[in-house]
Length: 266
Image (cartoon, rainbow, N blue to C red; front, side):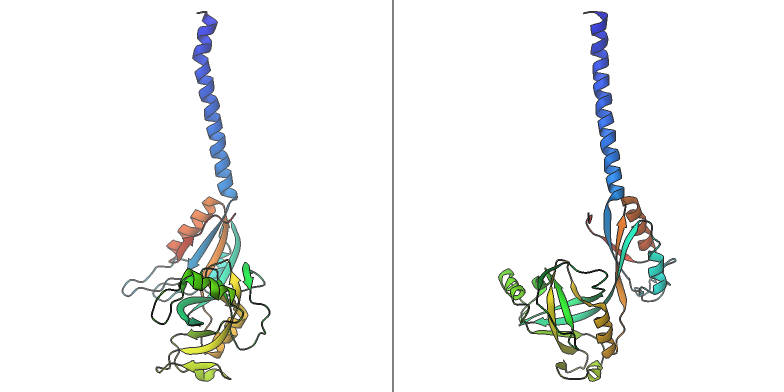
């Protein structure tokens, strides 16, 4: 074998290795760039103080008390690196009857004009009045149970979805004694303890997003009629960039909030 052939036999594997290394590095750089361009959704919830173990909330709040998202906290969130969107949700715990089925849920008020939901089925036009107008997530019906506590079947849940325009809906907010007396008109009842207020409600439609929703302005008016505050208990953030998302998650958890990272929303 000539000296030139021997040299090529030595250098060829090195060149192949360098080529593969360059390709691997290019792929890693592309992946890193893609992560920094990606959008991530964070669902941030306020934590309440545990008995005997106050939560230290750093610069976002004050320890030793139940935490709600104040305007000052929301303004600080607006300064998070990579923030593309912030959606504050006014939430309250409710019981809801749909047809002969029942469930408990967190009802969230949302600014429909600013951050609309993805409607997959509409119940048609509804008049805005004293009745709460609700939008249920696509999987919400699967949480319903009958009077015996049996979970609804998938077939029956689909039937209810098809009938949303005509379903009988009753809504109750818990733990505010005598609040029903503040409501004018009919369609309201209380249980024997006077703790729950049931009011006729209607479904506006079904959304792709999970949960149970009401227009934020209507929810504020409705809760005010019941003598209840409209508390912001959850904030949904859209953050661009993996490093920004990781920093936001760490800062918020350090501040005492619960953070759930949803799938990349690109």
